[in-house]
Image 1 (cartoon, rainbow, N blue to C red):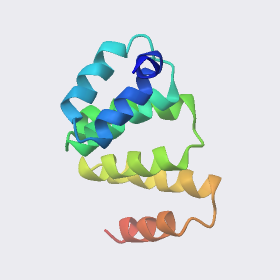
Image 2: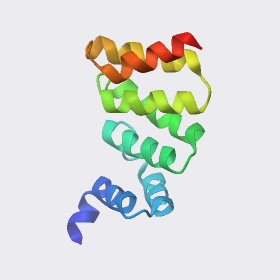
Image 3: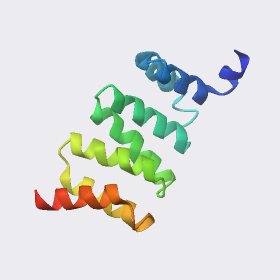
Image 4: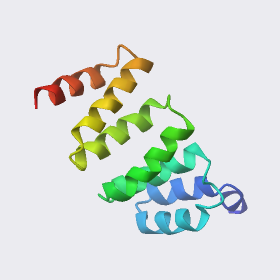
Length: 119
Protein backbone atom coordinates (compact mmCIF):
# COMPACT_ATOMS: atom_id res chain seq x y z
CA UNK A 1 0.00 0.00 0.00
CA UNK A 2 2.89 2.38 0.56
CA UNK A 3 3.46 2.51 -3.21
CA UNK A 4 -0.01 3.95 -3.85
CA UNK A 5 0.64 6.86 -1.54
CA UNK A 6 3.99 7.56 -3.16
CA UNK A 7 2.16 7.60 -6.49
CA UNK A 8 -1.14 9.38 -5.88
CA UNK A 9 -2.09 9.40 -9.57
CA UNK A 10 -2.09 5.60 -9.41
CA UNK A 11 -4.38 5.77 -6.39
CA UNK A 12 -6.80 8.03 -8.26
CA UNK A 13 -6.76 5.67 -11.26
CA UNK A 14 -7.39 2.71 -8.96
CA UNK A 15 -10.36 4.45 -7.37
CA UNK A 16 -11.77 5.23 -10.81
CA UNK A 17 -11.29 1.63 -11.93
CA UNK A 18 -13.17 0.48 -8.82
CA UNK A 19 -15.99 2.90 -9.56
CA UNK A 20 -15.23 5.07 -6.53
CA UNK A 21 -15.55 8.29 -8.51
CA UNK A 22 -16.36 10.59 -5.62
CA UNK A 23 -13.35 9.34 -3.65
CA UNK A 24 -11.19 9.83 -6.76
CA UNK A 25 -12.48 13.39 -7.11
CA UNK A 26 -11.87 14.19 -3.45
CA UNK A 27 -8.34 12.81 -3.57
CA UNK A 28 -7.66 14.66 -6.79
CA UNK A 29 -8.93 17.94 -5.39
CA UNK A 30 -6.65 17.54 -2.38
CA UNK A 31 -3.65 17.06 -4.70
CA UNK A 32 -4.55 19.64 -7.34
CA UNK A 33 -2.18 22.39 -6.24
CA UNK A 34 0.72 19.96 -6.15
CA UNK A 35 -0.02 18.58 -9.64
CA UNK A 36 -1.30 21.73 -11.37
CA UNK A 37 1.33 21.44 -14.11
CA UNK A 38 1.04 17.69 -14.62
CA UNK A 39 -0.63 16.75 -17.90
CA UNK A 40 -1.53 13.23 -16.76
CA UNK A 41 -3.12 14.50 -13.55
CA UNK A 42 -5.23 17.02 -15.47
CA UNK A 43 -6.27 14.31 -17.94
CA UNK A 44 -7.27 11.97 -15.10
CA UNK A 45 -9.29 14.64 -13.32
CA UNK A 46 -11.05 15.71 -16.52
CA UNK A 47 -11.83 12.08 -17.26
CA UNK A 48 -13.36 11.37 -13.85
CA UNK A 49 -15.59 14.44 -14.08
CA UNK A 50 -16.63 13.34 -17.57
CA UNK A 51 -17.43 9.87 -16.21
CA UNK A 52 -19.76 11.33 -13.57
CA UNK A 53 -21.47 13.42 -16.26
CA UNK A 54 -20.13 16.79 -15.17
CA UNK A 55 -18.72 18.21 -18.41
CA UNK A 56 -18.55 21.79 -17.08
CA UNK A 57 -16.20 20.62 -14.34
CA UNK A 58 -14.24 18.40 -16.75
CA UNK A 59 -13.54 21.12 -19.29
CA UNK A 60 -11.03 23.22 -17.27
CA UNK A 61 -8.96 20.09 -16.63
CA UNK A 62 -8.90 19.19 -20.31
CA UNK A 63 -8.09 22.80 -21.20
CA UNK A 64 -5.11 22.72 -18.82
CA UNK A 65 -4.03 19.30 -20.14
CA UNK A 66 -4.18 20.76 -23.66
CA UNK A 67 -1.97 23.68 -22.62
CA UNK A 68 0.55 21.22 -21.22
CA UNK A 69 0.51 18.79 -24.17
CA UNK A 70 -1.23 19.80 -27.38
CA UNK A 71 -0.49 16.46 -29.08
CA UNK A 72 -2.35 13.99 -26.84
CA UNK A 73 -5.00 12.55 -29.15
CA UNK A 74 -6.88 10.69 -26.40
CA UNK A 75 -7.18 13.90 -24.37
CA UNK A 76 -8.34 15.78 -27.47
CA UNK A 77 -10.94 13.10 -28.15
CA UNK A 78 -12.36 13.43 -24.65
CA UNK A 79 -12.14 17.24 -24.83
CA UNK A 80 -14.19 17.02 -28.05
CA UNK A 81 -16.81 14.93 -26.24
CA UNK A 82 -16.97 17.48 -23.43
CA UNK A 83 -17.53 20.29 -25.94
CA UNK A 84 -20.27 18.23 -27.56
CA UNK A 85 -21.92 17.61 -24.18
CA UNK A 86 -21.85 21.36 -23.56
CA UNK A 87 -23.21 22.01 -27.07
CA UNK A 88 -20.07 23.90 -28.08
CA UNK A 89 -19.98 22.88 -31.73
CA UNK A 90 -17.20 25.20 -32.91
CA UNK A 91 -14.89 24.11 -30.07
CA UNK A 92 -15.60 20.46 -30.89
CA UNK A 93 -14.76 21.16 -34.54
CA UNK A 94 -11.51 22.83 -33.48
CA UNK A 95 -10.56 19.75 -31.46
CA UNK A 96 -11.27 17.46 -34.41
CA UNK A 97 -9.19 19.65 -36.68
CA UNK A 98 -6.33 19.60 -34.19
CA UNK A 99 -6.51 15.80 -34.01
CA UNK A 100 -6.27 15.69 -37.81
CA UNK A 101 -3.20 17.92 -37.77
CA UNK A 102 -1.53 15.34 -35.53
CA UNK A 103 -2.99 12.26 -37.21
CA UNK A 104 -4.38 13.05 -40.68
CA UNK A 105 -5.73 9.50 -41.04
CA UNK A 106 -7.76 9.50 -37.82
CA UNK A 107 -11.08 8.12 -39.04
CA UNK A 108 -13.00 8.95 -35.87
CA UNK A 109 -12.07 12.64 -36.14
CA UNK A 110 -12.88 12.68 -39.88
CA UNK A 111 -16.30 11.12 -39.30
CA UNK A 112 -17.18 13.41 -36.41
CA UNK A 113 -16.00 16.48 -38.30
CA UNK A 114 -18.19 15.52 -41.25
CA UNK A 115 -21.19 15.09 -38.95
CA UNK A 116 -20.57 18.39 -37.16
CA UNK A 117 -20.18 20.35 -40.38
CA UNK A 118 -23.57 19.07 -41.56
CA UNK A 119 -25.35 20.40 -38.45
